[in-house]
Length: 188
Image (cartoon, rainbow, N blue to C red; front, side, top):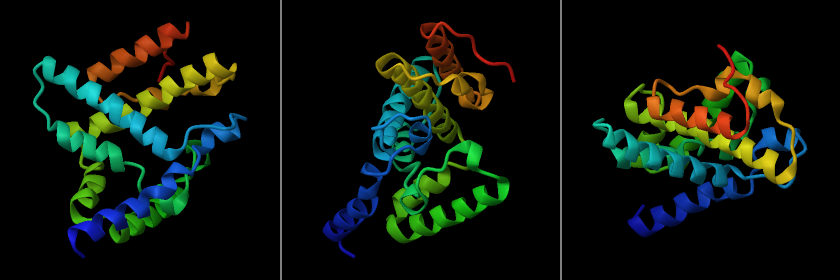
């Protein structure tokens, strides 16, 4: 496949993410809610800011790789939709991951496919993206509570929603989110 066709095919393959809602919000009565594509954009923005801060603190990391991973981190959800954490048993989690991997293998060119797989390599870059994923979600919780009067107490009580993946800058953002909401971070 030539370059132009690869651009068209990849963009069309990922286009459904713009219409797929983040299911956790809908289950809590937030309609309309952000799409998976909107979430991925937010994760990329948070990841970019984390990279900038980590570099200021002297950390060496590949910012381009972080942004690439952030942009495709939920690409596989074209095949599965967004299944919220409480609904994911270990067996279901494995089935979803396999379906997502099949989609990624079929739909993404080699480099973005590699970025998607790299999310599981434990590198600083992957940890930044995973932390950014949670940070963006909790910022969205804050926004929905303020803008729509939503009561999203279960998000604030779940320590997994504040998993900073060992990224100190993300930990600081979580503390600031909680402070802005007048809450404390949950205990492990």
